[in-house]
Amino acid sequence: MKQFKKMTLWSVALVLVIVTNSHAAPAQYQCYNFDDLVAGKEYTVGDVIDTEHATITIKPYFTNGTPATATVRHAESAPANIAGGTAPELSLYLVSLNVVPHQPVTRIKTLLAQNISQTGDFADANIEVNGEKHESPRGFAQMNGKSIGKPGKGRAKIRATVLPTSANWHAGTLEVRAKPGEAIESFTLGGHTWRVDDMCFGL
Picture (tube, one colour):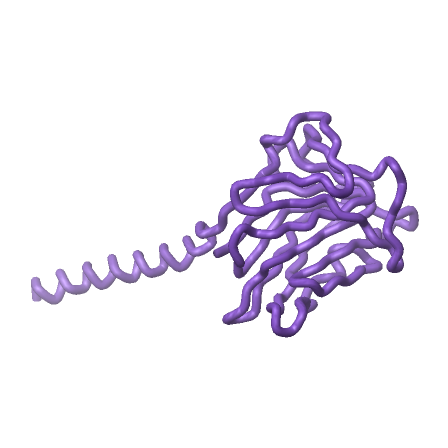
């Protein structure tokens, strides 16, 4: 009987370890929070932000297939937490972020916020994964559940939870997950007026 109890305790301990490890899987994410950017410095199309885990390039934002060309288009560090992280975050206007991980990843997850359009709805948003590009007329939220990625380069599923958080902003989380056995080598998000923070890469 004593031996049986001992084995039961070890079994319980093993189950706890398995459960703990299953919930700890997302800890494999490597994240970048934009905290090291110089406050007030503007980044425009073509500028590069080098991070430990990826190279981020400022790219044009598209509406109806046409790139925005306004001279005021830019990204800069902002002392705010509209995207849901901790200040600072990256503020973007009429630009996109092209993210190329230093090694292929299976997931990319980020906090973001999007300013509502003049009609009170979501504004246009851009997304690209592994060379396949799309415009979303109703913003990041409309991307939820879509699949994207050029065949042969890697397909991924989009999970977006973006909801109104104030009179002017919709915020939440967007994640792209590679299909089993495939990977993400390139990822782009863009919007009219938006914020991003805590971008994480799952190996």
